Length: 180
Ligand code: AMP
Image (cartoon, rainbow, N blue to C red; front, top):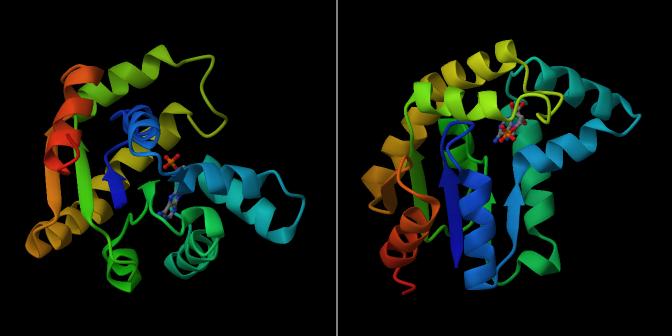
């Protein structure tokens, strides 16, 4: 099964992604995580990615597509995966031809996401500054909302109220992907 998780930062994608991974026995992969690893490398690409990420901007589509496609060709992803953080733009969604089964949108309000992220304060990641978080939320509304419409039109979008409890959300996703 190939699943995609979409939601603003703080929506609970990694929590749900890890739960699903355990239950469905397929790997969980986040593009944010991939990019954070690349950002540690002392290469031109590493420095560039670090700069873009820390400012809360998006990595350009062509670079993102190339990196994600390279990853998904690895043998561990052959039998499926749960992908978090990609596609983030309509161009990425249109160019990605990997036979996605379902796209899960975890909807939470901006206010709720900001409230949750403020609790992470101190233990937060280097790219979780207030300015970067605000920019990511704004970019989500501008560039990622059209991705939801794209998958809704294809009939594979599952919309979940991300403000419910972790267990309720997990069960709802399992039910709606037909794995319960
Ligand atoms: P995340 O952990 O998903 O919030 O991602 C952290 C950062 O990685 C984002 O702010 C972007 O700079 C970059 N990133 C992750 N996924 C993508 C993507 N699909 N397209 C472009 N940039 C991305």
